[in-house]
Length: 362
Ligand code: ADP
Ligand code: GN1
Ligand code: MG
Image 1: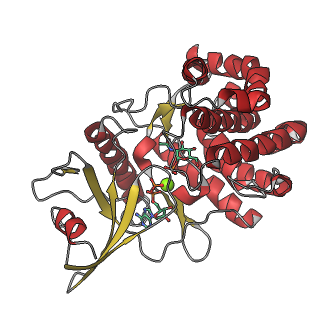
Image 2: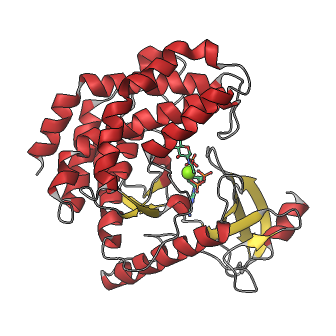
């Protein structure tokens, strides 16, 4: 175990003696560890070095998380649930802060590790997808009456107008000379910009309302118990006010993919309609009570929107020289781009059925 990591972890109010710190998870952004302790109150903790290049205001991010988890805990307790399993519990430092700033200017945070929980990298069964749909639907329903302010810690995160401005900039700069290698991929973005901007205009004009949203609902950001029922949403770094449709769309992008997000074998990738149906059913059972008609009208479209956005973000990072996402090999962002585009095409081919599925669950 690294003594440097141990001495940082000891700044937090943990129970027991630290005996191990190990890397955890497949996240692309933060560095994540599990801290295990021994002793009378032995426990496990999730310990993270936040990516300060991406999260430019970690203190506000942690305040957002504390506000939302506190709101959720009140509701969970009122409903007879377990507030330490059904949402995250942040662990403060000895001085009462929600993060520790180390000598190198890095931000560290900690929360309780929820024992006997499972996260998946793919949704293998409709039952799991149904449960996941209920999970984000419940998270959104329970936060739909939140009256406090959240800081917009990632301005323009799922705003395609903003993303297309970044895109223009990257294409103009072409910093590593990759633009000429991806002419066809660039046309995928350009061909669809109109319909994507039309959707976002509805959000800008308020026809689609903004609410508390998670903004990173891929399947490994939700915990299940061993029976396959949902426990809670995790990875709350991106909680902010946006449209709930992005949460639905991002989950569909992740759950329904028959291949991997970065599958090099494109024939593996497609949208599994059975998984889509199950997720949508679970989601709407929890969420339709607070949604307005325009949200319901665009629910199926949101899957295409977020998948398009992901194609754009991966391709943009490839052209930019791989500055945002962690990569495992040089062409990784291009492989991700192609796999996500294949998924988008599969959604486009099945879009009528997707819309009819939504209508059938209303
Ligand atoms: P990243 O930002 O790197 O994606 P996450 O917060 O999603 O980090 O954590 C990475 C993985 O660690 C998750 O996919 C999940 O498997 C596990 N995990 C995260 N938080 C908890 C928790 N509180 N309890 C149990 N497991 C967790
Ligand atoms: C990132 O942190 P992680 O791995 O859960 C990214 C998401 C992307 C996702 C693609 C803050 O999520 O927006 O959809 O990768 N998070 C951030 O897998 O950019
Ligand atoms: Mg994560």
